[in-house]
Length: 551
Ligand code: PEP
Ligand code: MG
Image 1 (cartoon, rainbow, N blue to C red):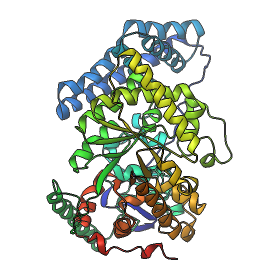
Image 2 (image 1 turned 120 degrees about the vertical axis):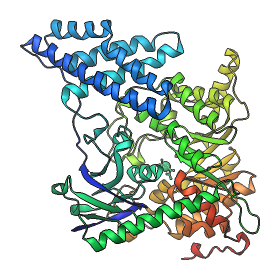
Image 3 (image 1 turned 90 degrees about the horizontal axis):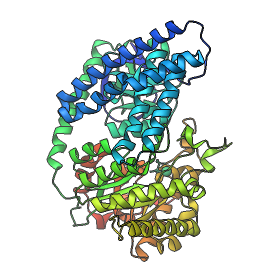
Image 4 (image 1 turned 45 degrees about the vertical axis):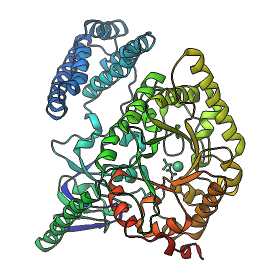
């Protein structure tokens, strides 16, 4: 038995084989080849493999979700064998005497550009499919497993840490849990694990050794342990814990349909955080009363080029419609810092967390901003959409955002496109600057949502990604809690609501403090809704105190 000790960042017990994430460079370069026929044969092999993979995926989709779901993979299979596509690949191999990977990449980009330029919205959306198919063929040529996990069964995924752009590519059906040597509770691997409701342990450091690959292990997201080949007694205790966890889950199901209300009648809005339209299923399954944070940047992270207005509109509309009139707060893109997107071609920064990120990128690149705002306003005709801007530090930024919204509404009016002119506009409170001028900011918007992950980082001057700051990184620091109180008072004095969408919102040990502060909404990972509801229903708001704000 080997016990590795880290920090538990997503609760639960799970067991399976340890699999170490392989970071493979899939950059395609132009290479001169001598044997053209051999290169064509390599392409044919990759094609054959792709057809087999797509066949399996189509069948799986059909079994799980019917014929409609299988159609996507069947369309991809048609592209793989499309005469024009294949002819183009062959011609490039011959004319440039080059490697098949390069020919596929060139062909994929040309065809995607062609689709994107079409008038029909459906055809435009096919450009993403062409790029997807081309990447599958390139992966097959390079011998890289799609989704980064080359295993037949679900595994405990081990890595140093995973960038958001890597987590987005992962085949989630193959992951039982995460174990990382680096990372922190606020890193996006941890956030993803909580969204998927699977255990995660980070900061395992040198304990996480690659020589344990393939061995059977348990992971305990509460104690922060990864236990390889446990002895009988330890295994029995872990199995017991797993059983209790399942029983608790069942018990929590009785909370469904109940109000998020304290014993003395104080209502809290309990909403969910999501990263993609697919996460809405988890929101509905856990009875979330709305979506308090849709991290729209994951649409950009998942794409290999700027997502078009139509692609974004479809994604936002899907979420808004699925929530059937419940509030859906969509945050405009928040890239930069740890969320890097290659095609944005951002200049390298010494300290990206304090660099050109989030709203700064949008205000510097009005065309990118306009495309997203158009998609958001169009989606507002299909549900209760609210728009939220991240990383605000100044009043002028908010005014500029509002001007951009007004310009987009004017365009849609002129084009006769429906939208909701009453769409709520809010901002994230994530910087000490926004707390200190919260009174002025509250006069500009309809709501505040506190991003405690970044607010803690900037208030305490502690990098949220770092795992070695120990006691210096204290999410319960009175400075952070006082910041919440200042922002809440400013919001209420100006008649607007305030929520928390950072990870702290789901911390049950702070619920009493949030009630005492007067927070109106908590937006948490879907699996945290019912435990939170159970706790709210046991609380008495008027007896809650601000004692945690004392130093
Ligand atoms: C936050 O900073 O608390 C937040 C919710 O945003 P993100 O974690 O995406 O930076
Ligand atoms: Mg943030």
